[in-house]
Every structure is written in structure tokens, then in C-alpha cells.
Amino acid sequence: MTPAMFNNDTTMTAAEIKEELLKKYPPKVARKRAKQIMINEALENETPEITANVRTIPGIITMRGCTYAGCKGVIMGPTRDIVNITHGPIGCGFYSWLTRRNQTDAYAPDAANYMTYCFSTDMQDKDIIFGGEKKLEAAIQEAYDLFHPKGICVFATCPVGLIGDDIHAVAAKMKAKFGDCNVFAFSCEGYKGVSQSAGHHIANNQVFKHLVGLDDQGKPGKYRINLLGEYNIGGDGFEIDRILNKCGVTNIATFSGNSTYDQFASSHTADLNAVMCHRSINYVADMLETKYGIPWVKVNFIGANAAAKSLRKIASYFGDQELIDRVEEVIAEEMPAVRAVAEEVRPRTEGKTAMLFVGGSRAHHYQELFKELGMKTISAGYEFAHRDDYEGRQVIPELKVDADSRNIEELEVSPDERLFRPRKSQEELRALESSGLKFKDYDGLIPDMERGAVVIDDLNQYEAEKLVELLKPDIFCAGIKEKFSIQKLGVPMKQLHSYDSGGPYAGFRGAINFYREIDRLVNSRVWGYLKAPWQENPELSATYVWE
Ligand code: CFM
Image (tube, protein in one colour):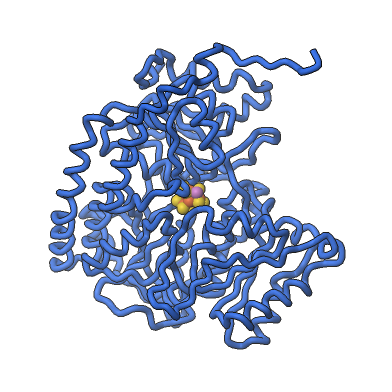
């Protein structure tokens, strides 16, 4: 049995920890959850299998969000000059409005930026009973009259699907009426999939169908890329753009941090797609390759070393010595400041432990930053990622298509007659591959984790608290729903969705910010004054008030 690799005072093995987590569940629930809790005991060249992207068992308080959140909040929310109208009760629009701290910069005072608005049809009981199409039509008209945007997007919430409003017909009617405004809609009702991952797919499909390829202009530049799966949380995208600019690389479109209508429309003119968040967008990279001939590589700008590696990857794709040299110059210029802070902080962070439970890619990417601090990730997992994000893309052909995934449209894509243009010949691609550049490649989270680490999919509130109790990590990273329950246990908690009030954490300057933040958190004495419930009573018990 692999011993669990925990410091502190834990002597439990990983298998015992798994058993402890499952102990409270009824047998059927325990059986299901057992498949989503995996001990990383992989032998060489073999990745253990985990169950992922399945429904959360009813009754369990999941950390996941809904499909609408994935579509409107995650993918379309960060675009700054498209009016995003939520068709539904006001709460859905309000709570998907900037809570993730996606930032925008309109560059010019007169440039459109609708980020400060929360657009919603504010459905009431009578709209649910008599239908909401008229109200939606009026809302689209009002938004058009006020702002004259290039695009208006409409998002369905749960009641819209239940009462059957035809949002696509309304959108098409208004688009034809306006003539100069692209209106399209998303059937992203919250219940549509098992998590927000379904919402990403619905959003990306519509953007691909209705927007990408409409504008052949694109920004000029010698080395032109799109950055896919970067949402500019806490300004991450700004820092990545700063580095790319410094290297002389032109970012045509970011999907979708601080993005604009025109960026999406001209993204097919780029020569390389660099994919940050694999989960939310890998299929778009595939579609852009099939339809327009743009190859893609996986990048990661979280972590200074990872950022340097990603820049080198981009430079080696273009292959120009000028760019390769410039990238090395930039890395050499940026790294000393990063190293200085890492060296200062490391004596205080070395050997400390972290747990990371974040959506679909950060639980992997952020392990890089913790490694740079000499910290160990003892347990990690995604809320809603798929098996390929854990085990690597080689498992994609064996993924089961169940009723839930069948709910999500798979676009049939073929080479565009006018616009398909292979950016590299087959021989060039093969030569690049044999020199070590891997295309369409992602190995997932599991191979990067140490043996004996516990990998858990769709962690829930109960298991989170139990894990903290058993393993007592020095820091726990997740989202707002976990923030205070974990802190009450005497463990510092860092939000890796919204970054609390911090960031950026991407790129070189981001790494410095992160080192300092983690140093503050894991070395603050305040946590020592808190008594976690189990420190006072070994087992919590409750009594009824009337007893
Ligand atoms: Fe991709 Fe994201 Fe993430 Fe994600 Fe998200 Fe997010 Fe996330 Mo919150 S797109 S999968 S749906 S990296 S909002 S910016 S932090 S769960 S790990």
C-alpha cells in the first residue's frame, strides 16, 4: 500500500483516507463516490482511471455550478462589447455578473464596455405562466436602442427551457430587423448538463457558428496567435498580453478575457492557437484546426517556469531565430525579479502542504506555483473536468457518451472552402514534432501529481471538511462556497476562482504576486489562535432542542 505523503501529524495511508471519506455514506453512494476518489498509485507509463463528468448524487452539496453559469458567466461574461442578456429571473443574471472578477480594459474612453451592466429580462410569475418571448423581444430592442452594440447574446435560464420560449426564433427575428447587430441565443438552461462544463460547450459552439470567421481583417503582426481558454481573472490576461507584446507576438483574440466582438470574428486569421484552459475550450481548438487549418498547442502561463516554457513553445512553432532569441531575452529579463522573491519566501514555505479543488484546470496549473515555493500538493481535483483533464487526451476515444453528454450539440466541422489554409505542411508539422513540440497534446493532472496523492473529482462540502480534518493542509484552495467553512477549521483558504481580491497570478509578475500572497497566508499566526471543532471535541455531536 502506498503511504500517504503528508507531513504534519498524519500517519494514515491514502487508502485509509479514502475509506474515512466514504465511511459516512450509504453503501450505494459510497460505491459511486469511490470511483471518483483515486489514489495516485500509477505504475510507470500508466495512469490510473478516474470517473468524471457524471451527475452529482442527489443530496450531496457539490461545489459545482450550473450549465448557465458555464455559458453566460464563464465563456461569454468576459467579453466587453457584446450585450449579454439573461432571459430569466433576476438572480441568475445578478449572480453571474462579475463575481469571478474577470477584468476588462476598454483602452479608449469611447470604446464600448458593458461590463458595468447586468442585463436581464427579470422574468416574473406572469411571464412564466404566459410566456416570456415578448418581454425578451422588448429587452433586445431596448438594449439595441440604448447601445447599438455589434452583438447581443441571449441566455436561457431553467424556467425558459421549462416553459418553452423559443429564444432562437426571437434572436433571429431581431437580427433580421436590425441588420447591423448580430443577435444569437444559447440554450444553456442550468439543468442542461451535469455541470458548467456543458455550458462552456454550448457557448463555444454558438460563438463558432455565429461569429468566428466573419471578419478577415485581424490585427497585423509577424507572429499571430489566439489565446484560448484565458478569462482574465484578476488581470491574468493583461499580464500574459504584456509578455506576448514584449516578445513581439500578436494576440489576435483571447477567448474570452477582455475580448471583443471583432476579436472573435477575426480569430480564424491567427497562425497558432495557444490553449490555456484545456477543459473549457479544447474542442474549439480542434474545430479551428479542422475548419481553418490552425494548429494548436497547450500552454500554461501559471507559474514562472511554466510561462517560460510556454513562450519557448510558441517561439519554436514559428521557428524564426529572431523570435527564439527575443523570447530568451524576455525570460532572462523577467526571471531575476521572480527568483529573488522566490528565494526570499521559500525558507518560510518549503515543505508546506496544499490542497487544490478548482473547476477544470486550475487544480492542475497552480501546482506549478506551489512547486516553485517548495510546497507539496497532497490532494487535488476538479469540480467538473472530464477524464482527459485528469488522465490525458489519449483517453478521449474511450469516453462514454451518455444521456447527459448527448444533450450537448457536437458540431460537424469541415474545411472551409474559402478560408481553410494549412499553416504548416505535414512535413513541417512532423519535423516540429520530432524536435519535441507536441501538438494537440495534454497529459492531464494525474501524471504531475506525486504517488500516494489523493485525487478527487467533484469534491463536496462534507468531504472537504473531512479531508482538512484528516490531513491538516497548510493551505486549502477552492471557491467562495468553501471559503469560510474551511477558514473556520483554522486553515487558510485561498480562492483560486476569483483570487479573493488579488491577482494577477499568471506570468512572471503574477508569480511574484502569488508567492507573496501564499507566504502571507501560510505564515500568518492568526490561524493558530483558532480552534477547529475536532480539536475541542474529537467527534461533533448534535442534540435536538426538545430533548
Ligand atoms: Fe477553465 Fe477557468 Fe477553470 Fe473554467 Fe470556472 Fe474559472 Fe475555474 Mo472558476 S474556465 S475550467 S468554469 S480555468 S470560473 S477561469 S476558476 S471553475 S478552474
